[in-house]
Length: 86
Image (cartoon, rainbow, N blue to C red):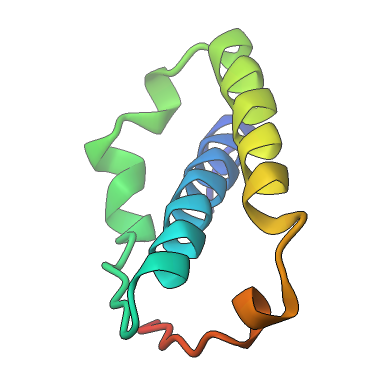
């Protein structure tokens, strides 16, 4: 079970990772996505030690980034195949 701060860090990191995966899928014919290692990341990245204010700011950046990555895409962009290795 994660604390609210740890969960906010997770959401931030998921948004950043998904943005990068979207760009990779748009430029590579057979993209492969590295695992996030979400459970291990909580400890490795020391989520519990992060500043709530900094995480809140990071979330705003991450949300803007994901919106840019997913809006304005063409039907051809959306039709690109990709394999999600979860």
